[in-house]
Length: 97
Image (cartoon, rainbow, N blue to C red):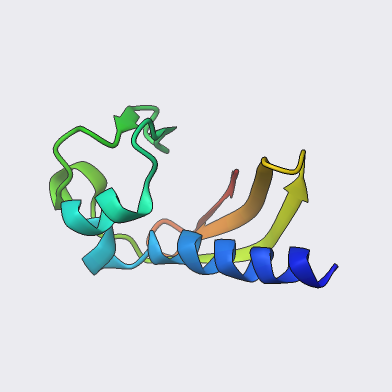
């Protein structure tokens, strides 16, 4: 259980970094954090890929807080992280994984 707790703490810290404006708009920082084949569906519905131009224009500065962070061990090599994001600008919650 201690191993899961340490992993959960580490993954929380990494996910939280992605909300920091200086990291969110830095291609160098994102290159270090994201897997080479990373992609995600943005809240706008646009699919974002790691190898796209990363800038404030594509990701934007956000004022978001993360809560209810949990990890689910799917196998010895796969972890699903789930959490809630609160967008302080538009006062909306979203579920993330």
